Every structure is written in C-alpha cells, then in structure tokens.
Length: 595
Image 1 (spheres, rainbow, N blue to C red):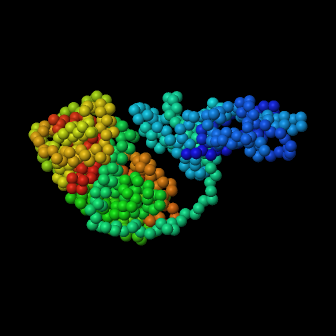
Image 2 (tube, rainbow, N blue to C red):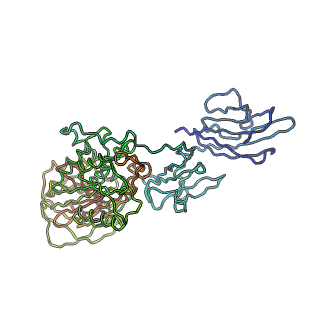
C-alpha cells in the first residue's frame, strides 16, 4: 500500500540561525518539508535547499528525488527511500537577513505495516508472535511521541478505544476505535523488550457521511434455480468441512493446550441463517467465512435438506430474537420459516423475561443438555441469533459395564486417574494415518454416525500440534474415506469417560472469521431496511459426554465433540471428530487434554 503523508512542523520562532526538527518517516511515503510554516510578506526572498550539505538540483525530477515546489517554499520527496535519509536545510536570504531551518530525516525500514484510516473508523494494529513461540503474556503496544519517547497504549484506560482482539493468542492484533487525527503516527508492538511489529497509521479527514440507505438491497434471497441438482449437496458438504477445519485452526491457536469442543454444523447454521438477510459487503464476508461460493444461491435449500437428513440422530434448531420496535422484512421472515423452520421472535420487556425465555428455548432444543446460555439480555439488544444442536448416539458395540479407573497422562506429564470405558475385543476399524501422523480409530454409533479418535504419537504437545497443523479439510476427508474402507477388527479398547461443557468466545471467533463488520457496519438490509442494524453479541456453548451407553452432545450457537481409541488406549491427549456418515459432514470436533 502506497503511503501518502504530509508532515508539517510548526515554528514559533523564525529568526533563529538554526532550528532542527527530527522526523521519522516510512519508506514509500510522501514527505513535504516546509521552509516556513506560515505565509510571509517576503516578496524577493532567495531560497536554497541543501541535502547533506549539497545543493538540491532543481531539474532532477526522477522518482525518489527531492523536488522544490512553490518557488522553494516546499521540498517534496516521493516516494521516500533509504537514500533520502539525512539532513535537509532550507536557507532563506533577503537583504542582509539569513534564516536557516534544518530537518533531520530518519527513514525507518523496520515499519512492517502502513494503515490508512478515515477519521472516526477503526484502525487495526497487526502484530504476531512467531508460530513456534509459547504465549505466556500479551504483547504491549506503544506509540512514539517524540525523539526516543514512547507512550503505552493501555486497553483499560477510561476511553476504552484500544482493544487487544485475541488475548494470550499468537495473533496480538489490537484496534483503535473512533480514530481522531491525533492517532496518526508510529506504533510499536513489543514483548520482553523485543519489537514484534511496527505500524505507521495515517488518519484522513472523514468525508461527509452518507445517510444509511437500503436502496437496491431489499430484494429477497435469490431462488435456487435447480433444486434437484446433484452438485448442491457436495458443494455444501465440502464447504462445511473446510469451515470446520478453519474453526478448529482458530480455536487451537487461542487455546493451545486446553480442552476444546465445538459444533461446526451449529456455528455454520447460524451464520447461514444470518446470510439470508445479509447484503453487499456483509453477504460476501459471511460467504467467505462459511466457505460457500458467492453464486451458490441454493445454500439455504441445501441447509434445509441437510437438517432433514440429520434428523434421525441430530436435532438442529435456529431462532432469531429481535427488538420489538423493529419490523423485520416480510421476505426474510417467510424465508426464515421456509428454510430454517424459525419464526423470528420479539424480545420481551425486561432483561429477566428475555433471559428466561432464551435459556428455556436452549434447554428445550438441546434436550436439557444445555440449560443456560445467557446471564442477561441488555435492554439495547437489537438482534440475537441462536442455533442449537443436540446429538445422542449409542455404541453399536457395548462396553464392559464393570467400573474401572486408570491413569490419563496430560501434556505436562502429570497423571490423573479417570473412569474408563473398556472392551477386550471391541470391533472397530483402526489404522495409522501417515498424512496426519496419528493413529486413527473409528467407532460406529447408531444414527448412521461415527466417532473418530486421532491419537498423536505421544503425550508431548509438539506431537499434538503436529497432528493439528496437518488437519486440513482435504487431509481429514482422505482419512475418513481411508478408514471407511478398513474392515472392523477385534481390538482391546480403553477410553476415558468424559463430560465436556465448553463455551468459547464467539465474539473473538467471529472477528477471526473476518466478520468484525457485523458488530460495527453490517449491511443487513435483507433483514431490516429502515435503519442500520448491527449484531450485539454471539454465543456458543457445547456439551459432550462419552459414557458406557454412547455419545451425547449438545451445542448452542455452539460446540461439541467426542472420542475413542484402540490397543488403542486413549489415555493421553487426543482429537475427536463426531461424523455423520449419512450426510458426510462433521457434527462436533474437539480435543481432550484433561478429562
């Protein structure tokens, strides 16, 4: 990105023999140096510019050269390069008076990003820890305020304009909300005294604000032209698998060693439901997030067919709650009922009534696996979207009902005693997947579903991370197909009994999916056209139990996972995929590091 910056230095005292200004600039920027910072009545002044003691040529017009403008009152350099670093002197002579102004220019090649933002908008400050590093504490951001002086950006200050997006994550990007002209300058991200990133921010004057308008965006979602097409189902299957692995990648980065659980079918379902009312840039952002092609008009019809296909083992429901003062568009309401079996519901008068109503809906749709999702509902809430899934599957081969315990080895080598699922001759398919570098076992469940357990080579965190880094959508699909072709064999199986109830931060996850605009500048004209409507918050909660009877799981805007393994002994950290064989999509994905 080409940086256009004008740096002006004000002088309160003119008649100095020498006044030196120190400026730090970025390669690629445009720099204009004023000989004086105000207009004068000098009519016949003789102006000379020098660079490192040598006269600046008035005829040199090559890129990167210094150009004298307005009869010498300004010296312009564009684009700035390392060769432009040094001392610039403007000498003004009139009669017997001589005035000198000096600029000392430092070209900072360490600046990795240049951000140009319109005043009043949000400026991102990118910063990343090396992938191999262990994140022990968040990095610190500083703004350079003068020669060798820095000011710390405190996220807890009274203005709350600065926010670290992903705490204790390898991605240490921060944002500055509601930027003002004074926010322009150089920002440094550092950890333990080492610079990780530097960002040069340019704040431009805001143009006249254009009134909100939904003209051209209020039409209903395009009809699916070929409802019986054979390509629609595989397109959605591939999109869900790719989306699932993207979610897992984001979650494992922010939680490198903890238990994980999420339901990609639930998160994808709620975003697809919202896509029904999204238009313009918001529609494109959601389509990119859920990995569906932009021209895939049949996405909602295929989501309906998928829900119907999964109905035997997975119950999935969507719901939209909205401010009763808003009148949602008739087309969105009708299509919401048609494709997602969801009649949008008005919020009630008080926070307690809304909280009870939403938590009651969640409990009902997850068969009481999840009874509590929200603590309170803000009176200012405009829009809330929920999606709940509930899964219950029985082992096709039952485990020994005798109560047993055994040691589970955690990532740090510590042992913890856990109740076990054990079978001496369990019929299961097992293999070593070379591509994933993991031992894989498939455990059949009722409802035409399977639980896949991926067991790394050891309990070391490096072996777990190696498997996770290789878990692309292509690698996982190849693994699924490979294991399906293997005939079950009698295996001595030992699994820990587990119950997972996890609520990841959906607001952070939405940002990582590229959906920050939903909270700030959403185009939801297909849902509500009278004024701008933004999302208040997103929630996701998942439950999974691995018991003698089988796998039970539930998720609300939410997540879940499952697991299994043979002599296969899953008594160390492992990864689980609860997979619908009938629909060929992942239902829950998780990681167990501490049962």
